[in-house]
Length: 300
Image 1 (cartoon, one colour):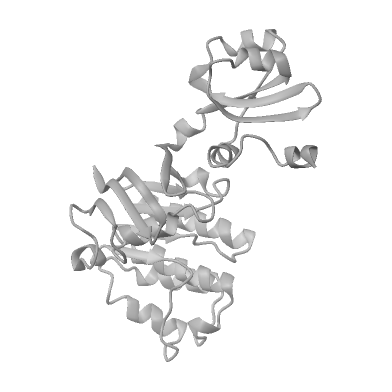
Image 2: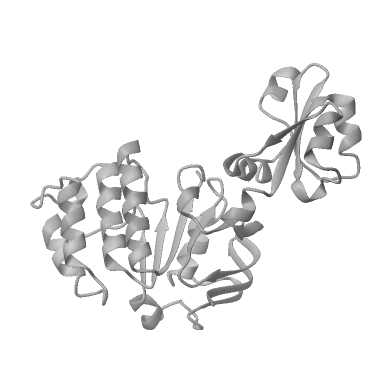
């Protein structure tokens, strides 16, 4: 069942369209990755879903309601990002105690356990935390709230590698025990693709694709070899990405479904068939140009 439905949504700031005629649906009790480059419109979309801002046009429903200024939607939602602020009069331990009154499914034991695991000083103020530790504390609130709709907007900003891994592990373990709808936004897919079930990729406010993570892993294939042979092979097919990696040699990425021959037969024709990582695929699908950075130096 879809609990979030967007139909032809546009959000404009003057002449700039942060979201441009976007239609999508997010399923209940799934972890969805909202992926896109910086400036793709991820935060704007999440703030509309969270009820902070209104679309300029189009229709957005969360739990069949307009989320903007909806107390019912707000009661079911937590929005975690690096702009969260709390009164300086409250210590970190005070904050954990106070937020418990706002979330019906709040788990104090889990919050305290994560708080101690990440070695927070209970007497410290939220405003005095470093960027990474602030993100870690905010993420504790997101996990322990167990809100039916939990939104994380770039939640690992400033975290070191070990803490990021622990965050993803804690989120997944609790999600398996207490399923809810989770949206994770990021411009880096490689770190979190193992915990994602669906992936919504946007670029310049438009949808590039929305697929189950398992399907995205099989979405594209790379073909490499003699340039003329490669171009002949992909003639008439949509090229997602193209790069000359050596003189007379070419690498292209196409949709796997466009392959008209078995992979072994392609290899026997002298071409290499290579897997394309989901992270690379998302980069290719949101690139402004078809070539790679090497092409810049070839032209200079």
